[in-house]
Length: 348
Image 1 (cartoon, rainbow, N blue to C red):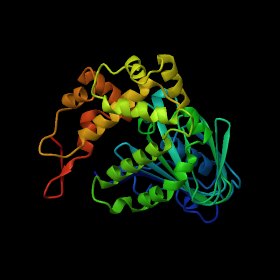
Image 2 (image 1 turned 60 degrees about the vertical axis):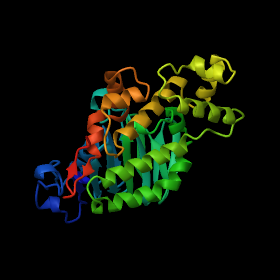
Image 3 (image 1 turned 45 degrees about the vertical axis):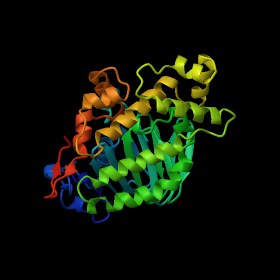
């Protein structure tokens, strides 16, 4: 399945706009020729339509344009698999997004978003943190929580949303901006990828984008330079070597490194996680990679689950869906093997 544009919304300004001539404007590129809604000549209609477009793309939102009479904006939403790209191009205005109720969240386990400022200047506010974004800057946010996004002038911005499980940093580290420096390094690559996605062969866009997000997450969760840094690395290596062991426990890990279980938990708490969550995440990551690994014969989902220490296939399936927002079988088929005729063919 190629990267597809799901919706586009264009909110024309007040001067000689198309809305003055036609009360309804079709949304180019949207599913089955659907329309986002009525566009009128009144500024309240334009502001209302923009808020509705943001609600569909990101979550419940209110907007406050600097100049209501001439406000114009465009929004495009594209997605493939578990990745969602929202591109905003708008005049100066303030967006306030409310916390999304659990039943309205796009991903069951929550999401992480990276905001990439392409042009203009913006400000991101969330959880007491205020980040000013110039062209080329990037910052992470939790889109299921309340946040504010202000366009200080006409500008363009990408929001790349992924399931929370792909980015295992604690909420505190994300909200503190601790990962933003890493985001800055990879933002140009992600922005360029978004621009060229439609020219890639089917499936390649999602594959490459997921790989980039995983690389970004891996950089962001590297242990900090603390006195326990060497010990953290040794413990993580020990865990990786024994992921397939269903009897891997905090007690066995602590004993192998001659520390108390309490001290082990304290070390992982300093890294923004717990021992149990770390083991579960690493098992899911390895299982996820094996599910789409190509070879002469592919193991069943149950075999992959048992290989990586899960007690049952059903337990693995629930954990996988909760973390990545997709079932293991669906994840495998999403990364289908191309047949000789170029059409995707499910992995067996």
